[in-house]
Amino acid sequence: MHTNSTIELNTTAYKNNLSFLRTTFGKKVQISCVVKGNAYGHGVREIVSMAYKNGITHFSVFDVQEAKDIIEELQDKATVMVMGLVQDEDMEWVVDNNVEFFVFDKGRLTKAVKTSKKLNKKAIVHIEVETGMNRTGFEKNALNSIIPYLKKEKEYVYFKGLCTHYAGAESIANYYRVDKQIKRFEEIYQYLCKNDLKPEIKHSACSAASIMFPETRMDMVRIGILQYGLWPSPEVFVNYLSTKKSKIDPLQRVITWKSQIMSVKKVKIGEFIGYGTSFLAERKMKVAVIPIGYSHGYSRSLSNQGRVLIHGQQCIVVGSVNMNMMTVDVTNLESVKKDDEVVLIGSQNDIALTIASFSDYSNQLNYELLTRISKTIPRKIIE
Ligand SMILES: *Cc1c(COP(=O)(O)O)cnc(C)c1O
Image (cartoon, rainbow, N blue to C red; front, side):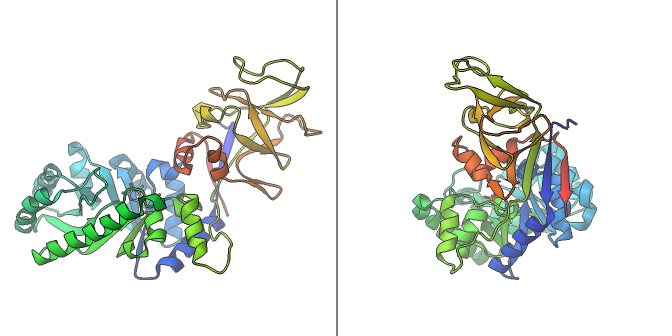
């Protein structure tokens, strides 16, 4: 574990976000916290334990390794749902630990039944249906073929949920497509019910859908980005504000990423900074070297673009982001010196560097920047 930088997770902010979500969705809608991608870079164990302390008992992940991390942290106190990949060799562990999982092809369903018979324990499945994203999910024909199978094997598979996922609910441009998906999903649900196959719950919403299309909340919402205090896109935020009197952001960023200056140097006019010739000093400059690079998840595409905070001021990255280091312009900072605090994401002296603005410079989504942050950086939960 390296200590070139640290990540702090703010308990108060996290609590605030969950309570905003609860108020928005109401008591009848269960919140499943999506913690794939190392909890969007925050640290899965830390987030899961904070969430559990705040009353969250349902978690969604992509794969079985992530499910194992949660169960190690919380034992059987929480329900875990795998939305993506379950390899055949993991099926026994999954069924044995009551881990719920998406089923989107017949092969997985038969594997689940087989495993259940072997362990004498029901597999708990969420049937994912295709509504228009064209990624995973049963098509109508395939669905018809599993209906009799699900009924016949009901001793072995528990049909807990019916689900789908929307193709871009964070953008108004996709309104028509998502709206069609919502209608399609309801039709499929009705169709199954007519065929005497009624799931215990149905769920479809991610963060964006839960705000933009309230009817998608149904019995459960699968919330990723909002719990971390970020909006899926500026459009979703604006859409939310347009329905409210107060124009204050109800969310608070949970993550702060900090480092320290490792060295400061002066650069003469006319010199290039770093590898190659991407940055030319057009005046006398002072640069600070920071021991963070793309190997820690600070994207190389932030070369000559990224911003950090030092002494409460925004400083721009000059030259290219290297594997383990980058240089920032501190020409205007008077007494800057080695060991001074550098904020990569977060606030300093009331100036905030949001992840959104950090990603605006690189045309990357919040999601991608966060999940790139190296797992090896120590995470600290701050009260
Ligand atoms: C990632 C994911 C979510 C959560 O998405 P957010 O936009 O972060 O809320 C929900 N459902 C599925 C299937 C996902 O893959």
